[in-house]
Figure 1 (cartoon, helix red, strand yellow):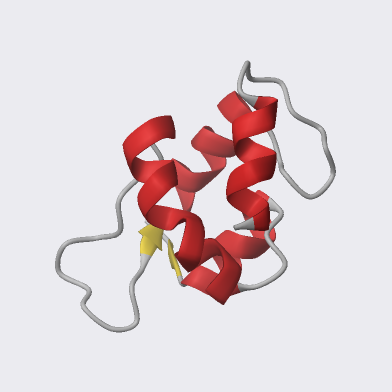
Figure 2: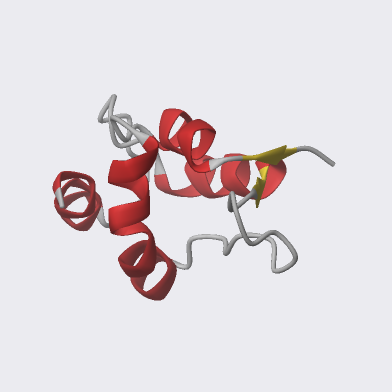
Length: 81
């Protein structure tokens, strides 16, 4: 099992930086069922790479606009926040 930091999650999901992803994280978790970070990792936060990859496959990648899920507008709003 591989774990990734916010910077890698940002690259996987199309955010321009880890900070941009972290600003949108709460909304993504609540509205889009984005995977939560591992509960044992306090700083830096870490996520399971396979869970992020599965989420991206289901919902699409923001940065490339290769979105397959139904919430394209919400994703774009979260990315820009």
